[in-house]
Image (cartoon, one colour):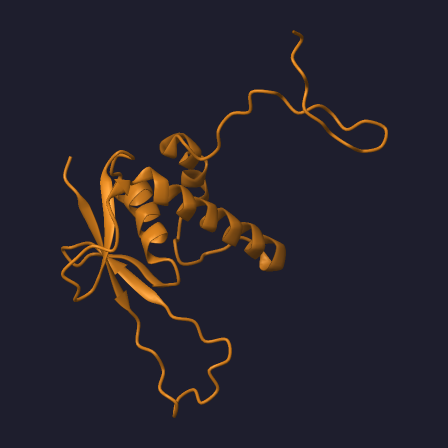
Length: 153
C-alpha cells in the first residue's frame, strides 16, 4: 500500500499592525495532499483533521500508512501510522465540535463539513475508536454509584 503524505502549510499570521494584541491568537494550518488538494483549512490539528477527511470523504482504507510533512521540509515529521489512528482523533474532534455547537446554537456546519448520516458509520469505518469492555457496567445503586459487574468464577 502506498504511503500517503499530508502537507501542512502554516496560514498567514497577522502582523502587529493588523492585530497588535496577540491575546487569544492561535497558529492555524491548512492541510493538502501531495497533489495540492485541500483537505482541511484553518485548523490547529492538520494531521488528524486531514486524516479524518481522507478516511471519510476520499474513502482510503484505514490501514493506509500516512504521515505529515511541513511545507518546504525535506523530511517527514514522524514515522507513518495507519490512517485509522489519526482519523479516530479527528472523528472525536468532529463529534465534540458538533455536540458543543448543538448546545450553543443548533447543528454545526463547521470545518469538516461532515453530513450527519456519514457520522453514524465513523466508528465502524475506523474499527478501533473504543475497545469493548470485558466487564459490563452495572446500573447505579441506591447511592447513585455504578460499578463493574464481576463475572462469576
